[in-house]
Each structure stands twice: as structure tokens, then as C-alpha cells.
Amino acid sequence: MADYVFIRKSRNIASNAVHVFLNILLGLGAVLITLFSGSPILGIVLVLLSKWRIFAVRRRYLWLSLKSNLVDIIVGFSVVILSYYSGTSLAPVHFVLAAFYTIWLLFIKPLSSENATLAQSLIAVFLGISATTIMTSMVNSLVAALAAFVVGYAASRHVLSQTNDQDYTLTTLICGLAFSEIAWLCYSWSIIYTFGASGIRIPQTAIILTIFAFIYNYARQAMIKYQDDFRFKHIAGPVLFGIALVGIIVLWFSNPIFNI
Image (tube, rainbow, N blue to C red; front, side):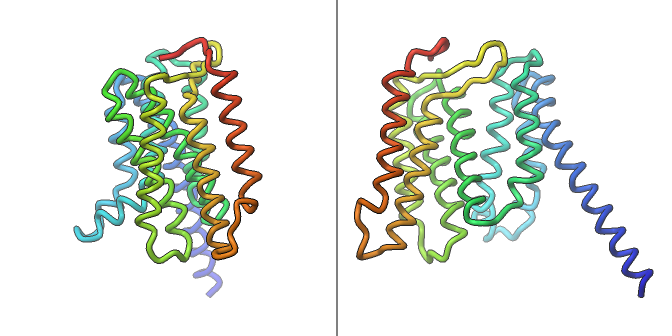
């Protein structure tokens, strides 16, 4: 019996070690293969290969499986796209992206608490909108709006799917449409903040929509909690703080070094 327990523990340790190694390999590989190939295609393929379980289900469950993994896919694709648009020369931003994606895979993604789920959604919003803003800067605004819709829909669904809400279809669609509208409005004046020679670029739209996503979720939770007794005072603090923060960003931080 003792030998069986020892063998089982040894196998678990080996399995965990392999799991950690593969996630580190994916985190580094997604960035490096994009950097050295000069194309995002191989990086995207690598991310998709890591999500092979999505396609291993029966056909009627494929769409549901895809939606359930959208946040993780958005984060992976965003890391690859941001790596690609950071240039073909190794820069500090590539190390930042590789390190963050590895941390995401090992520590952030496996979490399942309510706060962790919200954090995962906000990360997907920030990275997803950053990638789509930079990627769609030279194309039709409709493409940017559609990409923002997918990010908003995925982030909202990720949070709601962890709750006891029976039907959240309308809520997720409303959030997606709100993201799409805000992204479309911001498209004509896209602001991107740069940080010296690090290669780090943060679109203003990504900050605004991340703040919006937080307030949206806070208001939804308050409405559920108070129901018929819901009043604006229950969400006044975060809403007013968010509006003030966005106002400061738009009015005083809209003159970056690099703007598209």
C-alpha cells in the first residue's frame, strides 16, 4: 500500500512538473516564435494548439467549448499580436509579454474565485483592446468595432458563467455592444501612450474600456444584490470615480508622443 501511495505521488509530481514546463514553453514560445518569424501566424497557431481540448469535444459542444475558452484565447492572441507589432528586434516589451503570459498560464488562469474571475476578465479586456486598437489602426472602423464586441462579450460571459444566473445572453450582448460603440467612438482619435525605448504601448481606449468593464460588473452585482431596493447611491462611488478618472485621462492625457 505504501509503495502504491509513493508511486502515485511520484506520478503526480512528474505530471505537475511536465505541466509547468509546457506552460513555460508556451509562454516563452508564443512571443519568441512571433519575434523571430516576423509573423503572428506561427504564434497564433501555437496558442491554438495549446487549446486542442476545445476541438476534441463532440460537434454539438464545439461552440459552447469555444465560448467558454474565449478569455484565454483572447489573452493568448493578444500577447502574440502585441509581440508582432512591437517589431522584429528584441526589446524589453517582449520580455514583459513573455513573462506575463507565463504567469497568466501558471497562476492566474487556473484560479476560479469570483475576484479571480473578474481579474481574468479585466486582463482580457485590457490586452484584447490594446491588441485590436493597434492592429486595426489602419483598417475600417467596423473591424475595430467587431473586435471590441467579441472582447466585451467574452469578458462579460466569463464573469456571468461563474454565477448562478440562468440566462445571461442579453447581458453579454449588451456589454459587447457597449464595447463596440465605445471602440467605434474612440477610433477616430486613437491615442497610444509609449514608454521610452521599452516598446511598451498602451492605447487610451484599453484603459477606458477596462474601467468601464469594472464599473459595469460592479453595477450588475449591486442590482442583483439589492434588486427592488436598488438605488444609484449603491454604485455612486465607483461610477463617479470611474467617470472622473476617464475625464482626467481624456482631458489631460490626450497628447502622447505617439498617436495614430
